[in-house]
Image (tube, rainbow, N blue to C red; front, side, top):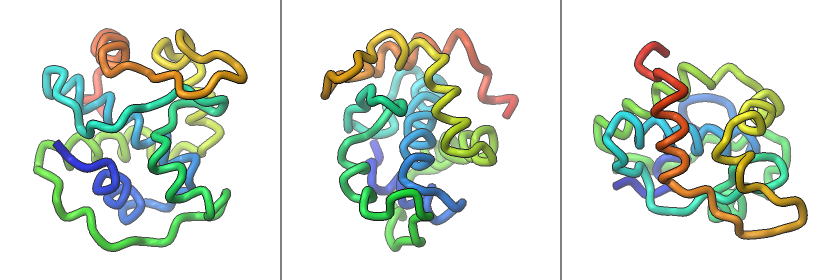
Amino acid sequence: MAAVQDVANYIINSIEVDNLKLQKLTYYSQAVHLVLNDKDPLFKEEIEAWQYGPVVPELYSLYKINGFDPIPHVGGGGHLTAKEIESIDLVLEYYGKMTGVELINQTHQEAPWKDVYQPNKKHIIISKESIYNFYKDNYSFTDA
């Protein structure tokens, strides 16, 4: 299992992202990996339902200093397996051209976030089970 920071580093070094877009691409990377690898998570960190969509709090804290500016390329991220990279690459191909706002709108239409989000409530986890169950039935990432 990858460290969420390695997943983020790979994304940051692959395409231009701000913190908002990084959060959504990390979320979708988890979703793709769960579906393609029979519920095996890409990373262990929890994803929470925040106002602007799914967020990994640890990553948000690291990159909030960047605001809406692109995150500069970083070192690291060399601890990913071929299967982990495959999942992330599918997400980058499928969602990488979308803006952060488009990704927010997309996640807000999908059950994993929509079913648990509560305004003004913090630390509501989007379960890996709900992510898996929704995306296994609603998306074919192999056609990306």
